[in-house]
Figure (cartoon, one colour):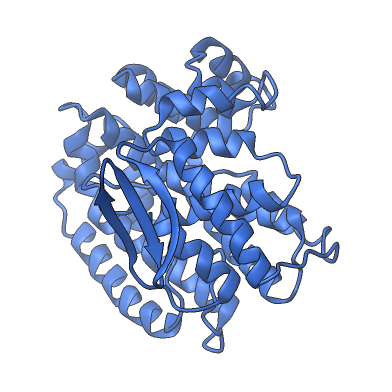
Length: 343
């Protein structure tokens, strides 16, 4: 229930502390800062979390009123253009930009929905094999509760994707009826593979629909179709963590070792790029309120220096690879290793 702390931080701006969850007589008593929030059943579902968070939002909104404005509705087009690209590098930029606009006072419901959508997309694409990365989906859940409770924005597809990515597939199906019939999220969570593939292959197919179908191929352990789909629609984004996440989810002997060889340097370089973008956008003067950004604020310049050094080390490691190792990588994804060498 880290989302309880996230909601409180959003309204109050106060530093987050630990959420207390005590098991009593078959239920969980949730409290925060010595104040009881709500009670959860022993085995809560996504709807139980949403119910608790919605009431928590209403309580905090009375104490710290959130005043929406119509200012800046057009400027959020910058955020939405990045969101339309769907994959993490673009979505992170969208979250950063949304945070800047919100801190400038552009508290409009559409921007709040955009931020919710950005963190939902990132939660779906996150690589968390050890299941220890709860902060990101918790923040997405907090924003979803705020958006759904205090605005009239339609967030059915976001709720379906987020709940599905958190393992609540039955709930995801139950809310998937609210988005349009051809909505990629609806088709994905309801396992309408034919419909999803159809809209993804269309000339105007969105990156979202194409990535969701890629995840479906990974779920089916269909290595041949996965590689063909990647070559067809993600040739220019082969070296991105969302693509590697989908590939590693298949956990197949023919593909996993090759992807694993590229993963460490790719992670370091991605972190350097993200930290660099954050530093350029915020500088060292950012006050660290961080409403929407998935990264921890503060000290970006120092992080960029450290990560840049690590990136250089990653490049040196790649340059030392023997030719046969590079050729091993070329078989499933032609050109992937070469791209890393010229980044």
